[in-house]
Image (tube, rainbow, N blue to C red; front, side):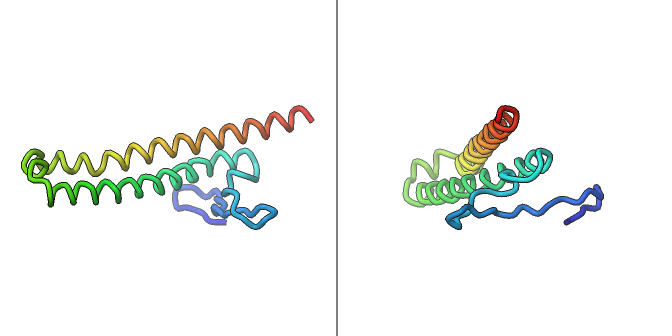
Length: 120
């Protein structure tokens, strides 16, 4: 268990559980108590959002860099703020989109789990 300076409550580490075939099938949001799943759903959503956001950041950086180098209209038509916005906007869009989708997926799984426990 890992504890923080602010809170003495031990927090479980986010570990990937394995399915029957040995493939990764999610982190702590898949098992444990309802409180543990709720606490770690945010961490899984951030991880998913960062993965897709960083991919979008890489693609947009390359595109803006190439456009700046080879397209004089782009280079002279936009200032630094406009070019920066074109680089970071895809990161934030995909970060928030995929993080929200992950939270929604986990919410649906937890709801289905609760319903199956209520009605055997």
